[in-house]
Length: 506
Image (tube, rainbow, N blue to C red; front, side, top):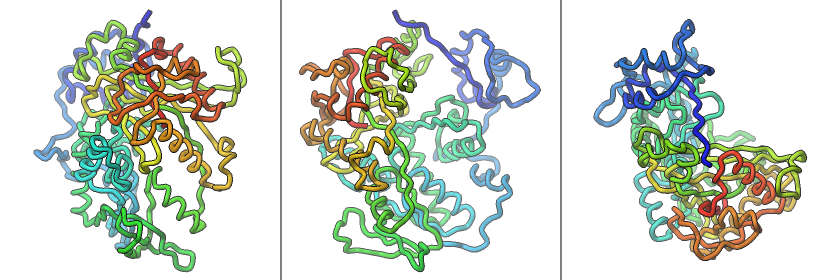
């Protein structure tokens, strides 16, 4: 029996602006009934109205928060960047001189650091080992269609960072209404993101929109005088009397370092992301303090999107039409914590304390290859803005910490990186090479048996191969993943399905 949908309504900005941005929202809102609940934020502290009354009063409101120019960038009345308004409101003075700053990496951290510094008057140079989004898109196409992996231009490396081709969700656990988060969202709108991301509970851009936003972002930085060096890899730090004075760079992909250059600066910001393992190794050699942190490993599970719609929406599932219906394409968020008190669960075994959860859920999405080395397999998920594919995927992962890396202690602070590489290499072997991904249905994973030849369809375009994923990770991690799947089945009945396919490794 499919459960009835359970909706949660949260107001996180001025509701009157919501309907002016998305008038069709009223079609769905008008069917809702009033229910006591917590209002996270309202524009007037004196207002005591409930949610439905507020929405009803705002139905015909025509106020708009932004106008858009022909190139898609927002034209605010002051023509000033949202991020600069925030800085000035916090009483920060502009930089008196023009210090030179090298920012390594053009992911979100690198771009926003460069933006703030350049707006305040610093002379900024961005060093990016990957390519601009236009060329990066062609390189990713060559990987997906012709299996040609470029080690420095792929799903991980390039303008915008790994998130550019990994869905573009803008969710946060630190408070969507905080000034910092709102400033970031407004900056995206300034560069061409749809204004409704300011009010959506789960704002989503999509890879296709992100590319256009990044083009505007880059142009703005260059207009400010920022120099962007694409296809340039940082090989080392320049150090003088125990002080970093710049970076040494060479052409990305040139392992012989035939074109070495030195970029001196007053400061260096490393925003290299999680995949630049060579940078971590070099920092360790330079005796730079590195602090390992816990992370999570597991699989990416894929279901038919229609199945997730029916599970989550029941009779309302018919109102969904590839992301354009009355209700959005269904997603989910699952989490559990396993400990010694979980002996009542169906599977008995090691009861190590660890959290298991779903992550980066991509409704109407696809599974993509995020490897940077042809001998390793690592995957992720993404969606385009309309979320119109017939699959839904999400990571199902278990937390790991230093106690799980005992076999890799010889790597010191990089033991966790060695741990990752070990299982990425094993996944590549299980897949048989050529970027084929090893898979197993969820029921077969729970029963420790190889899936048959008639596997469920997969959105992964480079091919899948049945494998014994229950033998991939150490037994205590596998056990935790199995227990979590059983818990998740109770949360959303139907999650354990013959059509649910696990892909390794995440």
